[in-house]
Length: 479
Figure (cartoon, rainbow, N blue to C red):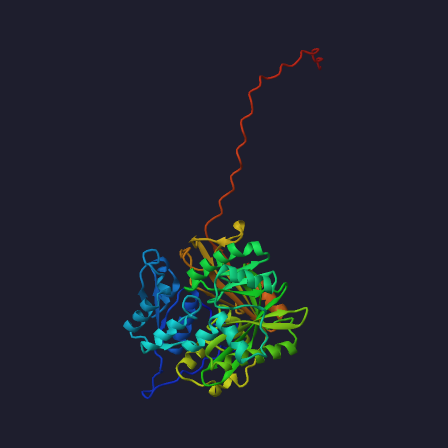
């Protein structure tokens, strides 16, 4: 279930009017969602508002997810444990299923194959519309190595963080590169994102094990085990700029998001606008983000990410997430624009110059998102599984929540532990923080009850005979 917006009822999210064909009907009427969970629910919600048919897919392990019931149509893909490949990573299966159900477009969500150029190419080869950048853009910007190489050649004015993005994946070459860059370094998956396949390496002796783990995680999550190296900037801020392009050369920036609060390189709290960012840096970063996207003729929603060295007041290009981000709702709240509707508008051939709400983009107030995850705080926040015994989200006018769980839902180890997102909007940052504090205090999500830690058993004491008391003088009589 999702609440449309945390904005006042007098200011609903703007829905881009969908392009229509000669028959007067929307060009894209049947939307196949090649994803699951809360992002599938998010796409379904906008499809419903636009009068489009949503088609969900699921596996046996998430058959109880809300997206299965909320969609107009739901199709079973099989099971993860029985299949040789995770069905959500099986491009051939997904394309065949989309064609078989008569879909007009495929929305990839985030994660899985959302930034896979081969998947986008296969979707379009099958005669369907891929809701996102074309395969060439994904090959260039959706891969961190390719993006850095492209910008070095075509946009040398965009500052890049020092690192190694060569083709070699040999441990010896990566070790030599790390030594040249200087420790600490950040090891990260060349494909995908979301904190998966990322490790901070502080000494040469740690690189081998970190590389093995990063490759394994990246391969499972994105189907590619390739990694790159970057200089790790201590005490840096993580700032990303939301862009949307129409493939015709027009790119619009919809403001920034501060995503610096992270755990294990995965975002936990996001907010917009950045409270500490100077107008000079904000303007420069927005211009750089638009330049990066415009270079490639970007189509759809994307995020240009930067690392900011606050002490030096410098920023460095980090990567492009060529898809919708988990934290996109706070941008929607600040701008009042439905980004999923804008994705579908562009995918159907719409031109951004014709969208009055973007001429120019106006941001108001402050928005914050907190992620709720199925994790065990007593075991260093390791992902948990089990049954949601109680789900009772906050219900307030200034609160928006997005989730695919409900009381009684199963949480599987086969999926990301993200359960829900809580989003608030307020006129000021102080009021937004207060609203989020209230929302968290009034939200309950109960999973498996923690088991008491057993006390270590003490060895039995040796038997000792009781001591005999010495006989003393008789006690005096009391009258």
